[in-house]
Amino acid sequence: MVGLFKQPKRHLKKLVKDGEYTDAIVFGKNLESEYSDDSDFMFIMGSIYFIVDDAKKALPYFEKSFQLNSDDIEMLTLKTNVHLALEQKDEAISCCKRILKLNPKNSEAESLLEQLENL
Image 1: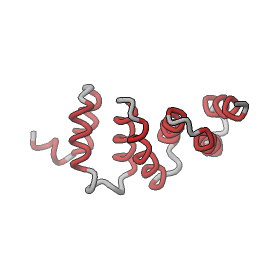
Image 2: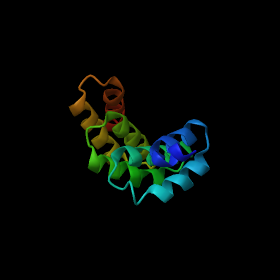
Image 3: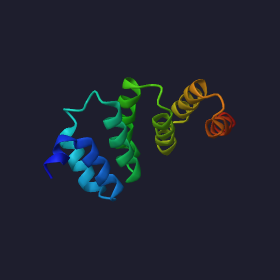
């Protein structure tokens, strides 16, 4: 049990894997000040909120993760989905363009960008 608290991100991921989203949010909130400059932690927290359909709470975590590591395609993909859930078309387009800049062959981003630009 002691090992879990030496590696709190691992414990947080385990809670998510086990579907313990409420516990994960509470645990994560307690770690937040300590991990405020950790893009991976911010990504995990944003993902938890996205899983529980709270895009509004997920967005600040993805924004912070983006500030810390703007080249993470997985994070950018989820950030795009959050913007779509919040009906923020321009921000979603911006994320798609960033993904394509990093990976020009990303067909998912390419297809989504095409759809968004034709709306």
